[in-house]
Image (cartoon, rainbow, N blue to C red):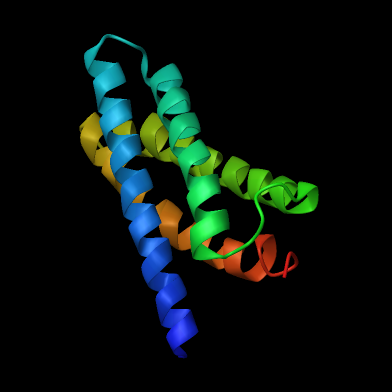
Amino acid sequence: MSMADTGQILRFSVVGATVAGLYVLAYTALLTAGMAQAPANALAFAGAVAVQYVLQTWWTFRRPLGLPDQMARFACTIAAGFAVSALITGFIGPALGWADWLSAAAVTVILPVQNFIIFRLWVYAAAG
């Protein structure tokens, strides 16, 4: 693994931790405020995605922000992530008797791994 690869993984991890923290805080705050699970997940996810696109594109992968094809690939990746997030928080977690915070925490572990692989191999590879 090269130093460039190590730096990219480190930057991705910093952004991922930031985005994961924002997601968990927003999701649990919205639930505490009385919002239902599905809209709380959607709003928390959307806010985290906006931050993620800017930071992963500009800082982690060093690409311009406004490339339409790249943005479309990013959106497809996020849609897949949203489906995984909704599955975990809406079905798997409740079926296993998990607290809402545990379901959200599982999302913050699974999605970064999924996203890094797809970002590196598809979203940002073609933009370079």
